Image 1 (cartoon, helix red, strand yellow):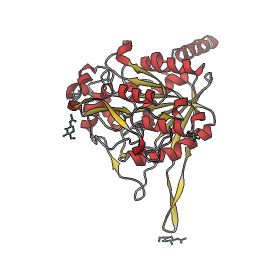
Image 2 (cartoon, rainbow, N blue to C red; image 1 turned 120 degrees about the vertical axis):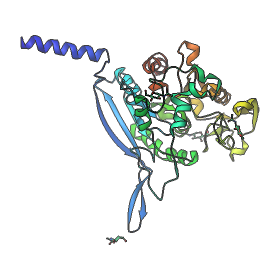
Image 3 (cartoon, protein in one colour; image 1 turned 60 degrees about the vertical axis):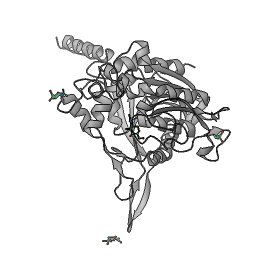
Image 4 (cartoon, helix red, strand yellow; image 1 turned 180 degrees about the horizontal axis):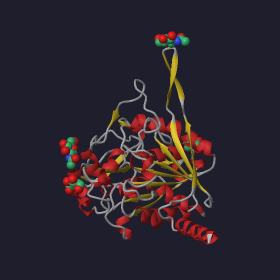
Amino acid sequence: MFFLALSAFSLLVTRCLAENSILGTFHRRSYFYVGQSYVPQGNSSIAFGQMYVEHLVPSVVSQPFPLLFIHGRGMTGTNFLNTPDGRLGWADYFLSKGYEVYIVDQPSRGRSAWQQNIDDPQVTLDTLAVESRFTAVERFNLWPQASLHTKWPGNGSVGDPIFDEFFASTMPSINSDVATSVRIKAAGPLVLDKINRPVILVTHSQSGQQGWILGDSRPSLVKAIVALEPTGPPFSNVLFPPFDNVRPFGITEIPVAYSPALNSATDLQKVVVSSNPALNFTCFKQASPPRTLTNLSKLPVLVVTSESSYHAVYDSCTVDYLKQAGVSVEHINLGDVGIHGNGHMMFLELNSLQIAETIVEKWISKISRK
Ligand SMILES: *[C@@H]1O[C@H](CO)[C@@H](O)[C@H](O)[C@H]1NC(C)=O
Ligand SMILES: *[C@@H]1O[C@H](CO)[C@@H](O)[C@H](O)[C@H]1NC(C)=O
Ligand SMILES: *[C@@H]1O[C@H](CO)[C@@H](O)[C@H](O)[C@H]1NC(C)=O
Ligand SMILES: *[C@@H]1O[C@H](CO)[C@@H](O)[C@H](O)[C@H]1NC(C)=O
């Protein structure tokens, strides 16, 4: 009787695990920090520049390349742990497929402390920004594709328990993208050095440019980059100010290697491809002959764009810029492959695991075998 009950129980556990259901995937969790320096304060010192890295290892690692997730502005690594309505997150999905997973909190954010007096000024995402750009975009219609949005769980607005949960997870971010880039350029390569074998970077939004910076700094330790709606387009912003004087290196605020080499960002000659004044959108490319992104052009890149996100307006401009500079990019517009109604936070939305499985994991497993 006891044995029967026991084996029925273990059968149940096995089945739940196999189905990757409510129990999730067994794994070991640890964390470490990289990049701390000591900054003198009076007769003592405080920590600065350190980055929190969470390391999740499934009981069976069957994939050759670990994944390293970097969240976007206003967010932290919680983005990938579970969804605000309590479903399993992308980390869990990839663990179930045998991937080791690393998840960071960007320096000066979340568990990577922001330090009063020595750190840069912060900016906070307010409810209007989150509703109108991410969760309830169909009510605001700030860009043409916004009305197609259907996949956020709940109504995406204040008072809805799922929105409230998500909003509670948002965090102040350093306002300056230059300062943010400088920090990741300092701490990010140290994570890659510590892991010491090639990883696949998964970036989102603001961290798009952080992926380019890391791939540029350590091309031999980055196998590939999955850029979910990376910050863009080149040299300008669209819809939301500041419009000009951003990303002077095309895709980044700080230098990345071009060939022929740049003496300064102004050496990059840009020409207008197209423009849409109603959206404050100007798409630029390099004048001919274009320079090559020397180190980045060694890495395969996947850019994923949701059907109803503001990125649907301009991600193809970013992709064309990368291609012109010699980077091998595959661009998947979810709407084109029958996945409709997603917004910018696709990995939290109702069909998050469908996107993980049929788009991201599929591409990763393809390039892992190369
Ligand atoms: C360090 O500085 C603080 C504040 O000025 C002072 O109270 C403390 O006695 C000093 N400690 C030592 C060990 O110098
Ligand atoms: C969203 O749902 C909450 C909870 O039911 C409600 O209080 C709020 O008015 C709704 N907001 C909109 C814009 O529908
Ligand atoms: C476009 O930019 C101008 C200022 O440069 C601003 O006044 C206008 O509101 C912007 N339009 C949109 C749609 O963001
Ligand atoms: C990146 O490219 C530059 C210019 O070609 C080269 O000097 C540098 O060594 C490369 N960096 C790495 C880390 O390979």
